[in-house]
Length: 483
Ligand code: SF4
Ligand code: SF4
Image (cartoon, rainbow, N blue to C red; front, side, top):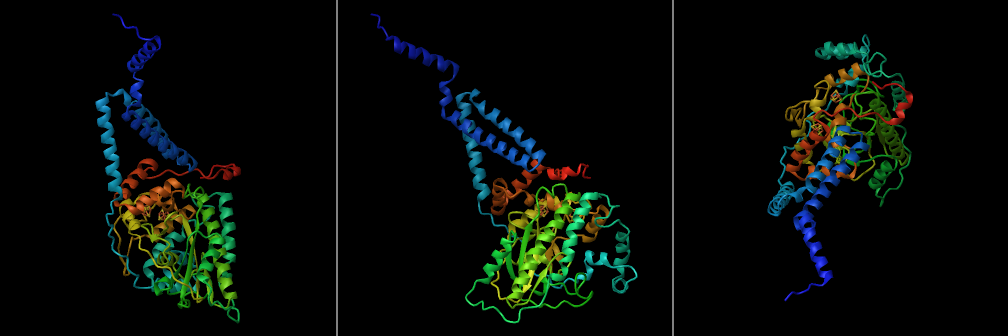
């Protein structure tokens, strides 16, 4: 007896056979869903990373990311060509690898670094290269200094023969941009006499007021990014005046108990072409910003009846990075600059010392920065003049730190005419403060293993010696090639 199947069911069965034959029903197998979703996540991540790198003008990172986005899309979407068993095994393996990596990355391996201790002696400002460079041959200060430090004379006379900062004979001379920088430094120079002044005769009643919080907010309102307060220590102060206001060679007294320290951000685009001229334009601008904030806060405190002094470019009595570190703003990295949590070394610092009673911030030693600097050394390999050490930290005047040959560094500045800053630009901590890099910085802080992984990825995407980025568009209006 022939059983007749209704025409509708016959149609459905034929369609089912056809779909099976071309593999459409298999599309909904869990392995395919897994591969499609994983493919979307990988390709999406690389695509977003590529766009973000394009915006950051990191062309190498952008190109690699776009290629990886395409490769992941193709690889994962063609996984369904494998037989079902093969696909299942591959999916389990991939899942296990991702799971194990995530667990390993965030296992709380404790990072142990030796504490850096306190410097045993104060630095004499006359010994720093900026002070030595200002000594005029034949002057009393010149004769006096080289009588006591004859070993530095030959070296210093050599860098005096170089063209000098912002000089037209310097290697990276640019008539417009050097003039712009000089314009900026002119203003900071003009502010040097405003760092101190008369204190109001009567004190404002500050009882029951949280002035620490107010002063920090005031600094932020005026443009500061990170702000902290430290109790001043002898090693924060230079021992003798080497430049700025006051009498050269005078002993520096520790007059103030507290120091409010803050950072201002160096523009990511402007420093991308370091050591070329746009970077020194940005340095001049940020020294003005830091000076403006410090001078206003110090004057505010003096108006309230308390002593206060601003410490600005060319007129410091204190060593700003040490105070910033002790106030919890960051750690001092291999290149000798403060590494802040979200901008790395891409900051300039300003300080106000005062006797206004303030609540101090504790330093939270962040071993992740020291550990990362131990393995990274990118600034050392990128430094055009090998001024940064590749070695481990060593005991210098009682404190553990990386040795920096500041004389070599300065010699390069006076040859180029700019303040170089190449090390600051290429530091992996100096990337833009967007969500992608925030996530990577979070991993670097949390995980020993992730730090190693992140460093390799930084080398892969940006290069072991990253290329210069192009200066901002507005600079093209001067219609000449920036050297
Ligand atoms: S480049 Fe590397 S080694 Fe140098 S300061 Fe930055 S993180 Fe440390
Ligand atoms: S500023 Fe330039 S020369 Fe100086 S340490 Fe950094 S990279 Fe080297």
